[in-house]
Length: 286
Length: 286
Image (cartoon, rainbow over all chains, first blue to last red; front, side, top):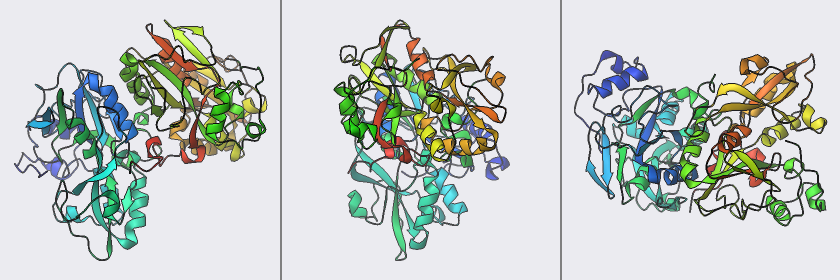
């Protein structure tokens, strides 16, 4: 789950976060930005990508709905289309992420920088909310996040909490863990709860065994970070849940983002709060 | 769009609103309650029903997602199942509404009290949020609602605002209109905004022509009510939008609720506020 470290042409706009989502996606599409998206697009909602054949799409959409803490739906494309009409109408999901993962029969078969060849006439693309959105809000509120300070990928764990199934999709909930000072846990809870489309409030605080996690120093995905004596481990539902559920399906080509290489939407993060559904961004029709 | 007026066996529990959602559904299933659900189940989220064949279900789910003010998704069943696993796991959507409407080739062909015969192995059921939820909150805040005081069905209008299409589903937004005293409009806006899964904030206040509505005294559905000089007409997205979009499809059997005869979920209305997605009601798995 490491970051992709080759250096792209880093324009001044990208470095200073002054770029628009459209221009960032343009740079990504043209191969000028090939690294993870954590460093760019601050202030805009980023999203997990899952694309799979239409015959599985209804069941997957239902899976996301039933497990919306882990898989908060932001947008879904028409069959065969790679255009996210709500989240970024000018974007192409086949080219506008820096890197992808392609699964066949449950195994990773490629990690390309474009999936124009793999995205068929029958593929349906799903964008699911991502923790970058609430992390930015936590940082703004003065809550320090160790994995960011240490330049690591957040610790993620496969729990023993079953997802609500929507056959053939199932599996267990994946969570991310962030150590939070005990006197900030309540604030962290309140802030993240404002972003139900970016996993919302924590699913658990304090006891890893409640989630079936044996050893916090050995995450299933991402990097380990220490939990200090004045801190609690705080667990949030994680978008990897959806990608894992989709990747385990044994038929068809499943496409996901490469870890940390997310899709950048047109939506300002501040707008993705609890009073709005994604589809409400703009006035309906007219 | 009139109410169904035959009288059922009205138990004391139903009359005093002390009944549980499960016992209310039991009374409905046994034919002991055949009228509209506006009078019962206060305090619990009520829902619009749309059921259609699986081959159209992905497109309809996408339509709901793209038009979530009008069609806020509360639950979706597995293919062939009539059990809403999130909203009321013990319920049967084929029997637990007092009355249904059945459409074929875009026309109403039956208005039965059960759809056990019509609900096929390929049907998928959708529950969509309903304005009863925010109306209860408005009343609690001291905002009077004329259609309720006058015993009428709320005025509904077909606007000229196009829905975001998800072929074959499309059409125009339907809105409900409630006259609100000018000095309460802001409060009504704030309260209803807390319920994004029951249509959320109004889509427009004040000028019917902005929505393509020519004459407020001639609603397309429901009953007319007067708007007094100290009042503004306030327009909310309406769940009829989804039923209309589904009913216009020319193939297959489409099932909906009979107007005002909704499905009563297990969810307390107070819980359906903005910080929670429906699937978050209970702890994930475990």
